[in-house]
Length: 203
Image (cartoon, rainbow, N blue to C red):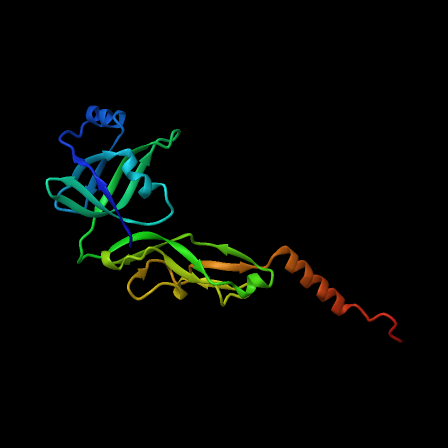
C-alpha cells in the first residue's frame, strides 16, 4: 500500500485553549493510538490533503522530529459540520508483526458479458474491510466482472488474494449486473411475439 508522510510537532499542552490556538494557526490537532501511550501532535492542515480528500487508501508515516517516526493508518476524523474544516484526526500505530483491519477501495476490472448484452452494472460495495500485516495491505481489492451475465452477482468470496483476509460475510455482494428497463421490455415483447399466433395461418 502506498504511504503518505505527515510532518508534525508533538504537543506539550492538550487543553481546549491550546487546541483552539492551533486550529486558528492552521494546524490540526491529532492523536496517535496503539502504542504504549498516546502521542499528541499537530500538523499543518495542508499536510492532510492527499490523505483525507481522496477515495484511495494509504498508510501514513508520521515524522515528529528528533528522529521520532511512526507508521500508522487513519482511524477517525472530525470535520466541521458546515465548513468541512478538519477539526481533529486520530491515527492508529502499525507494527510489522501485528495484523491491522482497514477499509480499501474496490477496483472494477474486465467487461461484463451482461453489460455488453444491455445490462446495468451496480457496484454494491465501494470499499471492503481487509485484515493483514502492514506490508500485505493492498491499495485496492480487484473485482473482475468479466464472467457476470445479466442478473448475476459477484460475491465477496470471488475477490481478494491470499495475502489478506476480507472481513465480510460470504454472502456479501460486491457487484451485480441488473437487467435494464430496455432489456426487460425487449424480453417481454419477444415473449408476447412468441405466444401470438402467426398471421395467415389456416385453422
